[in-house]
Length: 505
Image (tube, rainbow, N blue to C red; front, top):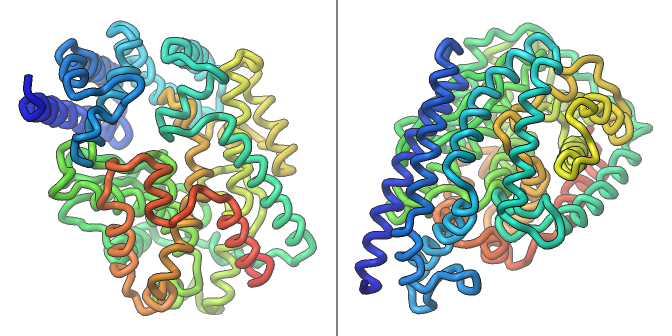
């Protein structure tokens, strides 16, 4: 078969794979946002879809096409003569073919059905604050994830093939080294702030009408550049962003937290993910595996950049605070923009990861990273997970959860079988700070944001990050954007400048 014919057929299969993936995303969206009565049947449907995807990606035809295009263990991107986009497509599909063919269809179906059911079990256990309802399911998930790791194969650490799924080319040893440096930097900032008077944020815990907050959050998303012709907002227990098609990017928000800014920053965070998805589904990449973020950490770099570096900045609230005060004159009558900034940037150890401040957030990720590795190696049993969680929270943050909802049951990720995912959140902070530094050298970010010209910021990110989708590997894209490999000092300097030198906290 000629190169042209092989590439043409590969693109056809890839297009069908993406179409089925979008169908699976519809089921996942329903799982999160509609009543649970159909959960059991939905789990079976998801198992069928995942099995079909597995059959397609591991087919003999896929293997033959990739081989004819020069893909191998040594040359994952295929023949060097392939153009950039074709080479990237071959790389992505070869990686997935080589990984998935190590799993049989029955394993894939069982895992998909298990995690499909696990979502409901986790949600009910969380609501009842009863870990015992969830533990047997989580035990089976951990068993199957261990088996996945064994089948994928590894040299140094059983966690390696798991994190490589979410952050290609990154090893456990690299993460551990980065986290050790990050932990040192975070402790330095926390120590510098320990004698400062805590900011007064009581005004954030008053009653704020949800319908007005929904209106305000929509305005924020419109201003930063989310295209509502290509996406919608929903409400769910655990906020998320998903792609149901190139022009159907959806995000959800949670309105149950006592702090009014929780929904705001959830909207901005998920909006960052959505901007990346909309930008990466462009005329060159749409409908293919080249659309979407190049990695989960790169995705988190955009959500955390928009949520924190931009969304918690003075420039952002110079523009938005008058609008918020107009909506809520009673709650904010005695509050000026500087007091508001102090309140939303308050540094204080807290139980819930998604609501954690910028400084303590990394500790939440280190906690989960350490627990996941212990679960995977068998050093920690699922039944002992709540106590281990609580002890690590005391060690890292100096606080102990009063219940399971504040501790081990707060996150959805393990019910999805996604061990290896959590490190990408903290890596995203590191990527985001480095990307923001590069952007700030080319455009006056603060001036644009303060004047409400946030579309200009989005356009810079679209040109330098979003438009490439998955064409480049994450480490290569970071160098392309910033001129340097990942360096944790950018994030450390950002925190020190903002919280120590700038007096924010």
